[in-house]
Image (cartoon, one colour):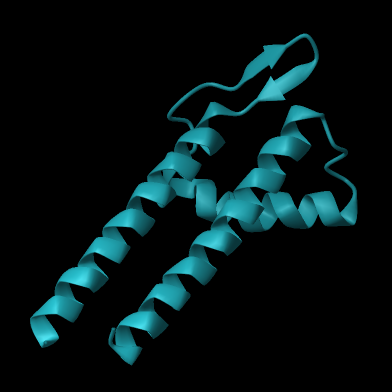
Length: 99
């Protein structure tokens, strides 16, 4: 394994972890109706809103017995996971070409 490929994989892992945690927190906070005026909740909504931007409005949010299910967030998590897998594949292809 190439050191450069390992560094690239570590960067992809780090970025996917950040995106996953932020979107996961957003989903849970929205689900349970967290107070958006709270500083932490507001921060999570603002930061994750930037990540969610391209997917906002694709699917409507559902209100199920007082719980808000934001399907766009779930979709964004899936798309970012697929992008991460494609990045891993690209790193592997480029690493094999270098050898």
